[in-house]
Length: 528
Image (cartoon, rainbow, N blue to C red):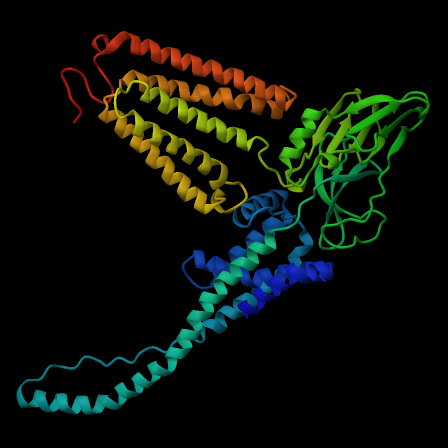
């Protein structure tokens, strides 16, 4: 039954939800998942799907489906296990909880098929002499049919045990795949429209949920705070299929209520909004997303490109003291004009309803790691007078290993952060081998200890010099990527020059003036 539920889960999530989206297929995954989950939870408890596993499954399911905190936590956990995932809180999914009764019934049915206990004979009093021999012969003759029957019973139960074992071996991986695949859902890639519903402002994304509704962001305080909510699709009807919306009825221009001369409109094809103070006769820029911010958005959200970062629609809502303007900015998320007249890019204020993110400066950070290690090993090796060739080779190997490990071996979208296991193993091995060999060669060549101290002090400074400008670019200072590159180069050269100056100063003193070294000990001591 568990294998059947697993197959239903796979078919429903990968076929039926796409061909027949609706309430039935949406709840079917919950029912099948609650049948499959208790045995998997029981595996963690080193037992069968007992009462603890069943109750734990029900409690966790209730927590995830009724609280935003639980749904957000589940999204993070499933992202680690199964890749980019989205779990939404939906109290109506609690209708599937009776499926736990079916899981409990399967457990009892499985226990009822357990192997029969082996027959054991009681202990008899010892006998001696001829009486012992006769008694042993009689006992052997009497127990021979029983032993034969027991052997036949064992042979008969062996195929059943083998079948049960293979069922577990084949079923558990399939169940794991099914459950993890269920959690992986699509994520929005753009804010495509915005509308006003009474006191609420609703921003619609391009993500269609399984029941035909659209993932939306709702604000009841003029755009200051937002919460995720499933909202009706554009036009009031169901969307075409999960993952795509019908053309959104985006409002491209609007005027302030009771102030017909103050109007706003989106600039076609650009992340910009224009304003008119004469009823639409003339227009001037009100908000524009600078090119540097567009580059950050494109790097942050892998599903975005420059064309998708554009204003898609806007609304104007009167608020105490003035009015607010909320614009759907495509892949950039939400832009809000405050009552004070100041624009701010709210972006994707709710992570649970945001596009899948990536580190926009991941490559730059890995280069900074390599630069820091190169400064450390370079400073240490500068005091060597022999073994410099193998030291250089192993230093390059260690730096290459750090780059491969950091850039390709880790990711925030898989189990335990492991991206490419091969790159992780090879890069980690190269790093360990390179650094260990460099330290050993430096010890063998009696490198001065102060050069190691220079490297230890220079490595963090080198990392900060190479990475801090790009981190600042993500935060907005400097605004352009080219400015971040120029600043990183200047700071890195300055740090490198300072390290070289310290190393040259150390070398100028000579070994007589500074006889003590870190690896070789002093004049009166030797390494143990």
